[in-house]
Image (tube, rainbow, N blue to C red; front, side):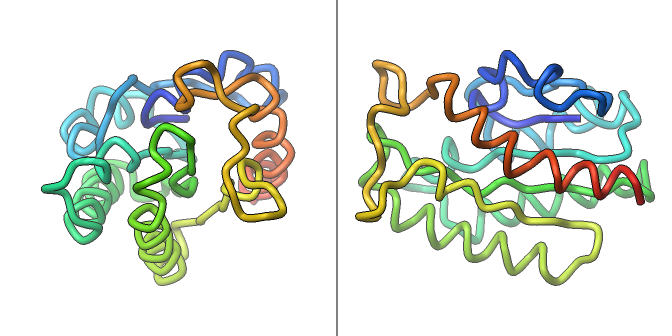
Length: 176
């Protein structure tokens, strides 16, 4: 089950890209970690998934009142709630993405990614997948040609790259 914000909502080829893995897209645009936790029962638990792939954070982290610690608090609460109902479930967290529209927040996103990576490393049920390299050029700058006109949402080429990185991870987990 894939969930999170518009970066997953916009993945229109998700089922085909992940085939033959059984995939359900339960993402909702604009979502934050608080909303993901709040809607965990409806969006995730009700579907009884084996693996939950999550992209959430950049809608949180652009808010000046949301710290990296606060973001992680709700990620932990989401994990706890889903795990309480589905003890066998495993989680895959995608790193927060750089984008031209939110480039000024990239240092905060990087801090969040480091904290998210550490959280995943401390729990065998959690896996961290870094997708940032698909969006940055050799100079470390975000590649605006990968984004739609709003400079926040992706062109289809990005999802092909994400598939190349993510699908082998999911195939391995599914086989286990």
